[in-house]
Image 1: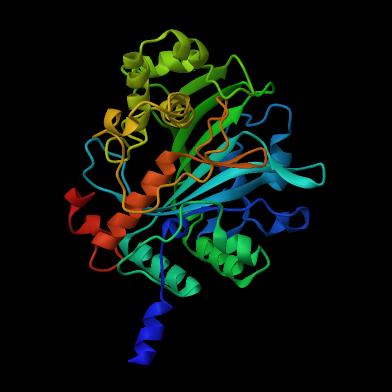
Image 2: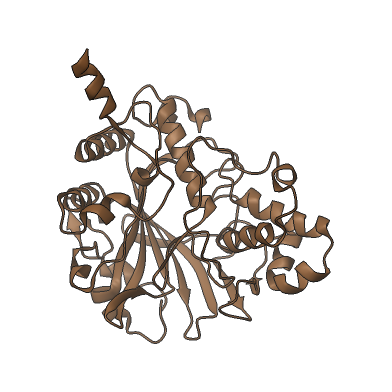
Length: 386
């Protein structure tokens, strides 16, 4: 009985930081340990140059080939048992998703550039089950009765063990075993202009090595542009072209939050906030129902309005709209607020940024895994369960 009690006490369960990994920025002498576009395993390179060279210029004042060879690094890894992209949600796809940013050495430490790539690698239900079981073995964790003990943050495991430790060597190899050119299904990007005040969103679906431009939901166009009229302020000064129909208060507030907070009625400000909170709820929206810019702007709007009017009863105002999860949904990056940051998961220069949307998606993935009798793709048995 004593042996059983000790064994139970020492069990480790998977949590938010096991499905969404925000990697710590490395020391200058450990940059090479990060995954890069030519990192490869049984399924080929993570991002072959034949595909990368078809992208528009991601950072105007830097050579694209140099960026590809030296700067692009994986800064976040997401393990998703049920990526949903239908309206309404009817089916889902197990995936590995990698978030990339260019890393540069600045003043003897590593910083990032405000541009992003995201690559999507499809898995079968069997592959997902094998992946998560192997990850659990790597961490010596349990995958039944999934629960979370920590809020989503910069990877605690990597902060403790570093890029030279056994955990990163095992985890990065596990990613390479299951992700590569062979199952690369999508590539999306956010580039930035030389002034740092304009960003373009677009993406490609990939099949048999061929890239086809995606239509962005809500605007039926291949690209979307966000421009900022002021940089460095916690206030939001962002314009979107094309602007999706609906949520007019949300987009009008984003154009000049400073004026809106001073002149709008509480009802209008709350309407803008409700739109942002609804976009952050993965039970209400997924990538098939919302435009890129709409989703990337939510963090600034939702944080700013609630922080600016702390006396309002936000719990009551947002009742029925806000996502309700089962884990610690604390946003560990609340201290960072810049209205010109469109980042959802990654770094703004050296500052980590996590959006509530990412926290909610990760929580929903944990709930999905915990609802299954074993770690597998529940959607193969119950598509409505997504």
